[in-house]
Image (tube, rainbow, N blue to C red; front, side, top):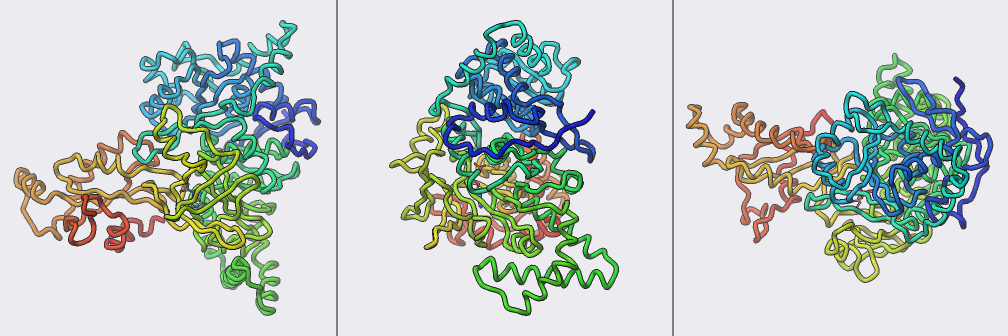
Length: 615
Ligand code: AMP
């Protein structure tokens, strides 16, 4: 079967008609070629979902959902990896006037249950048998849930689950049999006003209880339009997408792609990115810092494995690129010699490196976590700049983007159109604009706390320079942000570790790191009693914390906890500390709270060893 991968939509400026996301599918309708296709990489080959018109697929699904009882305002959960059906279902839900509730497929059944209950979802749409099983496991706790729809064949897992193909067919049958079906679809989607709730996206609250961010159609549509201006993509672009659509960043970026006629290909998985880039040869890609770190490491390893003299030339070229980036990204002009060197390196090294990632990258986009300077410099140096942006789920999500032609290292760029930023007296970044959420679902107190005096309080700390570039310098809220952009509330996890009588203190690590680890201070009196009961010899504190049998006791505690957590929250490594924290030694506040920064500074060597060689 032949697949169209080029979405040759004429470039459309979605403003001013794109006031709601329900308007978006109408941009595809009637355009040529008719088959608008979103592909997916599977086992290194690009395959199409179907050769159907995307507009028709969305319309049929929407009518099918309505036939299943979905009415305007109803919440519909989508629990799936990023794939074309995710987008089609989301837009079908939105054009039915209903509300999409994304659930990360990596969440456990209990975590999904929380979201399904809190949002009162009426329908759940899942991708695979694995996701379906999770829902089946908790379904008896979900009285509001009336039906479950599965992308993949569901038989064998749940006889009551409906297959997505059947929903689409049901909608299509309505189009064929009912005279007014097309009109109904149009009328229902046109009745969606900008102020209507479009989605509830759950994010990690600092207390560990997820908060449902309520975003309206205006929030999403305004962010789509402003981000589109900032990113300037065209129908000639091909995007490789592999961040979860459940997260606001990839979702809004994907809306931008759809509005701009960009071809979207969904990667098979995070693990196969290298291979998928070669297959798709994207021109744009959005990712989190961790991905760029990985791609950089892969390129450098390839260079190091070259035979000499190519290896020496490669290393020289990379250094030239870095030197150029170092100056230009700080707004300084480069000297004549460096310019000449860069010209030569372009031919001998840079072009080859770019070829290794498909050879067509115009730029990369990074967000969700701070991008390390050396990574930004490496990619800029070899001619594939990374545009760093910043935002939060609560702001739908983009607040700032670095202008592609005036990148500034160490900053997350300038506010996008319509967004105002200011820095509060204590340094907190405040934001105002059409993209700011209407509040947290069912959480009036958290809403009042975040939306004060007309400004959204981001919980991040930063500075704005004279040219309007924002730099993020710190975080006020108690959240760890991994280099993969995952947000983890440390306190509830620490509290569970501390519940063990053998533990005196626990401090979670993971900010700007690849994974979560923990520093644990044993309750030495309890530990000594336990060792005695086990018939094991006593020892000094320093010796105890290094002894494998003692570490194993603590590993058991953490293993028990890990079973309750989703993959990215799991504590992958631990280190035991030989002395208790105290107010006198500065690790505790007078109210006995742990001062994270002091602990991290004091035990820097221990922490580096924990992460050593694994970053
Ligand atoms: P989320 O709601 O999951 O998108 O997380 C939003 C948070 O991610 C922000 O409050 C920041 O703490 C962090 N974040 C997002 N982008 C960046 C960035 N470019 N640099 C540093 N932190 C970021």
